[in-house]
Amino acid sequence: MSELRQLSEVLWEIPATARSDMRVPARVFADRDLLAAIERDGSLDQIQNVATLPGVTGAALAMPDVHQGYGFPVGGVAATELPDGVVSPGGVGYDINCGVRLLALPLTATELGARREPLVHELSRSIPAGAGKTKGRTAGLDEILEHGPAQRAPEGDLERTESRGCLPGADPAAVSERAKERGGGQLGTMGSGNHFVELQRVARVFDDDSARAFGLRHDQVTVLIHSGSRGLGHQVCGDYVKQMDAVMRRYGIELPDRQLACAPASSPEGRAYLAAMAAAANFAWANRQAIADSARNAVSRVLGRQSAEGAHQVYDVAHNVAKVERYDGRALLVHRKGATRAFPAGSNEIPQTYRRVGQPVFIPGSMGTSSFVLAGAPGSMELSFGSTCHGAGRRLSRTGARKEVSGADLRRELEAQGIVVRSPSNKGLAEEAPLAYKDVERVVDVVERAGLSRRVAQLTPLGVVKG
Amino acid sequence: MFHWVEHTAELELELEARTEAEVFAVALAAFAELTGDSDGPPLEQVIKVEAADAAMRLVAWLEELIYLSEREGFVPERIDALELDGDSLHARVAGHTGQPAHLVKAVTLHRLELREDEAGGWRGRVVLDV
Image: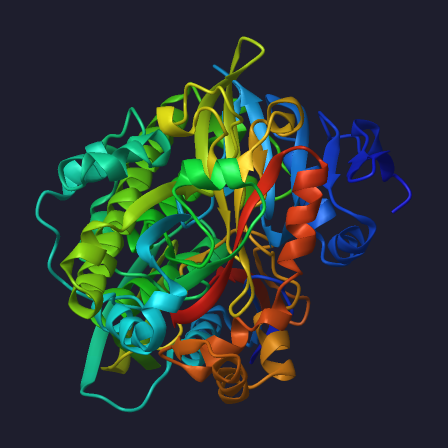
């Protein structure tokens, strides 16, 4: 693309002059290989569309795992200036507060030994996958929407959760009855698609000091949980995208993509969405808490109570959310869609125990490949509104993946590598095959070279329970 | 008729129909291909949606199918009756209760299109979040 110019070894820019409707430049964190893939799938057009949002400031950003989405690309970051900059529900996505939680168990993979398969089996039995069509509604749903897992989680877990698992301003009344119906019975369920619970071992430690601070050591067993706000969040996003699509013109807003539908954050529609989004985010944290509780119960049944009690939460991070944050004294609404907050050492927003080393960030690889534990670095505050990447990033479509590999073959390959696999369908397994994703190591290398976050540890899978 | 267009992360559906009413039958067939499973106890659902334009009616229609699939385990098979009246749509849908396999999260407005072409047929496109 001729407009693309190189700002540094791993940062590229499309200037605001590239299109008459862009208000700020679009910037992409990538090396040359990742950039070539990014140029092929339409995500550059989408990040330029994001640069047209009213009130957008600095630059619209694409992380190295960016890929084509709808409206925002997945792996996009945009900050709008408050009070009148817009909020775009599509800039958060349907799975509000989809995120990742890491538990560290008090034993090594060597000590786990042959109990690995029974443990994966027990995790699979304990944590429902798929939609979960329970018709009942969780007791105290409104309380969860308002306060997240606060009443249901040990202090150690809350302290080690982004925003302590509760965004302020959540209003259950802003969440539609249908959203409550869809999600109300799904607390503690994983969902489908790329959601998973993975049993892992710490294969490599890059930074001893930070790993120690995070309570991680070589060969330690960990459990990584990836899920979100389930049907409740999907419905909240859908409700407000349509609402904003209907009122945008009243605010004089015209956009190149209807899915970017937005309204000033200070408008009645903007305020209502932010209150509903916060409620859905709180629900997602309560959901991952419930999954973590089920995981600890599974650990207790297979390895004993002491192992479950010693399973400490390293952290829980959101990667689909909009948050009010301050940069250079200005209040901004930072949309992260498929991007993770990565505050550096010294930030008051991160737990005291981690303040010396920076906020933990988890980057799941594709199924069967490594995941990474990172720590936020100072460059994120200068270059990316405190953000870094969120995963490997898709490379192939779901049908494309199924053409390349069969689920049954993939299952055999993973098992041949010693990875225990539990998945409700071979089709779903094939769609999430490693070859459908970019190389997570390359993605992590870019964010480290850009100074957004740095490597602390590498986790390799022992078993996968797929949603 | 319908077909799926390559999209890196989501599912993009393109559909063609002779009439606006047939658009909804085609969309149902596409959705059933994603969620369909083996037989189960038969079930009929009544779907009513209202939206200001044809494209948004298509979105609302698919959203109802998602909701019924997620909430009731409803696998749609065919439309037994469908009535379009101004902005509103009223349909009786036959299907069965099952365990829908591949669940769609949401219907997006990205690249959304549904219009009558010069020959009087209907063409549409909708991207589903999966």
